Length: 54
Image (cartoon, rainbow, N blue to C red; front, side):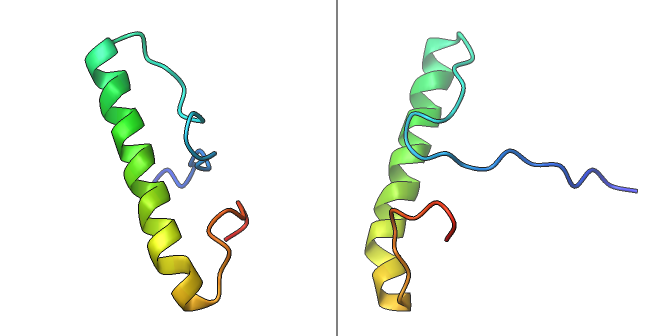
């Protein structure tokens, strides 16, 4: 009975802006951390960090 809907991550800048500057900056930092993690880890697993399907 839980909600299983989700919004796929579209990469940096893909997060919709909320209009609250501090919250938007925090979301931007999270996106940057995700990109850095993908670029560091994905090649070790044989994945392309820039491919949105991975």
